[in-house]
Length: 188
Image (cartoon, rainbow, N blue to C red; front, top):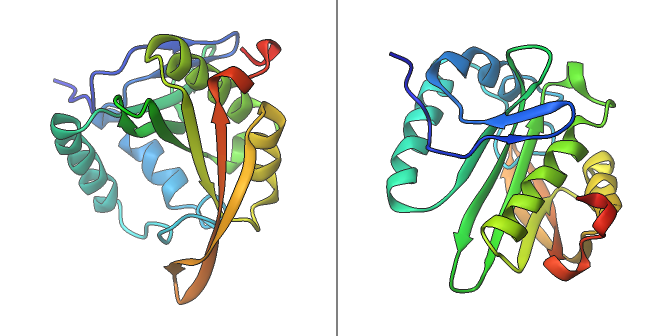
C-alpha cells in the first residue's frame, strides 16, 4: 500500500498536475532536497542522507493532523514522477492568510513550471480556500525566485535581517505578500 503524505486535492494546469505526495515519491523528493543548487537559498542545508526524506514525510504527515496545509508534489502531465513540490502552509482561516513555498529539481528550471504551479496554487488559495493573503519568504539573493513572485504580482514588503543561519552562513529574508484582489486575472 502506498502511504500518502496528506489528503490534498488534485489541481491540474495545461502542463502540470499538483497532487499528493506518496511515500513512493520520496526518491524524487530526496533528489531535489539533496541538490545543493536547489537548496542554496533554503532555511536548512541540502539533505545528505535518504533517511531525511522519510523523516520529512513522517513529520509532514503528523503536521497534517494538527494544522491545515497543502503539500503538493508537482509532476508533468505527460510524464510520471515529481519534478518539484509546492506547499501552502501556516494556513490561518480566521486571518485568511497562508504562506507558500516551492522547490523544483534543477533539471526542470527555466521552463515556466514553477510559475504555472504557483499560479494554480494561488487560485486554489484565493478561490477555494477563500484566503485574502499569501506570503512568501525568500532569500533576497535568490534573484530567480524574487523575479518569479514579482512577475505573478507579489509585492516585496520588507527584509528581515539575519533571520536564518544555514551551514554557518547568516541569511536575510525578503518577505513578499500577495492579496487576492491584486492577483492579475490573466495570472489565473
